[in-house]
Image 1 (spheres, rainbow, N blue to C red):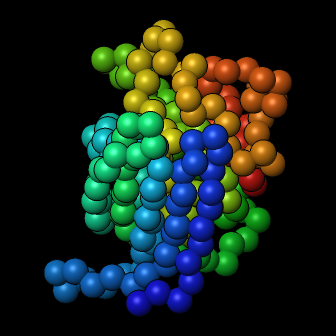
Image 2 (cartoon, rainbow, N blue to C red):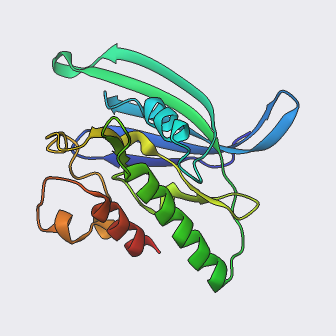
Length: 196
C-alpha cells in the first residue's frame, strides 16, 4: 500500500532514486517501511555497506528488510544497476532535549562508521540530508541511504572518485564548498550540523 512517492535526480552520475512509504507484512509481523528504487551508474553495493556496518555493530542502523539487484548494460558500455530495498521508518513529535539526543545519536553513528577497523577499513556516508536522517516509533534515530557511502581503506587514494558532489548544495560543508576532492568524517558532521 503506497500513498506517496518521492523522486530525486542526482548529478553528475545521472542516478535516479524514488522512495515510497509502504506498509509491510512478513512472517506475521507488520510495520511501516520505505521502499527505495534506484537506477543509475553502477556504484558500490549499498547492501555490502549495510552488512559491513551491522557486522561492526555501528549503532542506530536500520534493518535491511529487502534487497534486490538487477544489472543491465547502459550507454557507452557502462554498467547500470537497479536496486530496491525497504527499511523501517516512522516519525515522532520531539522536544528540544530529545532533538539534542537524536543529534548526538546520529553523530555517534557517523563517527562509529568512520572508525578504522583491524583491516584499516571504514565507511563514510557522504550524503547526509533531511531525507536520510530517520526516527523510529521508540524515538531512536537511524541513518538510511548508504548508497553513496564507500568501504574505504585507510591512507588509500580512494576518495578522488567519480562521486564527489553527492551532498545537496545546502548541506555542503566548508571543505566541499572550497573544492576539496577528498572526503573525511568532518564533511559528514558538517552536513549533519547544517541539517539540524
